[in-house]
Picture (tube, one colour):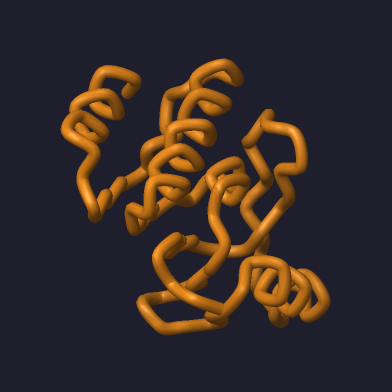
Length: 122
């Protein structure tokens, strides 16, 4: 995973799309991933991360949450998480356990698609 991340970051791309970049990473690898995404954003890159593990949330600012291919919530990360965590699982729905070890990682429902656009003006 770290080699793949290094290859993706090589040449400072303006757009970086990562699919499950935190899969099979230990805590040190996840910290390195978060730092790499933060560095890419600082230099103005747009970073799109598709992930199921909530540790990927640490370096993003905008969150699109999907369930069964449909949008559940979209917006600033803190607002989306507040909405989703406030509503809790729907009747008959189970939450997947949080498997992340990163500080601040929280339990979320279903599939996460994460969009981070550092070039966007508020």
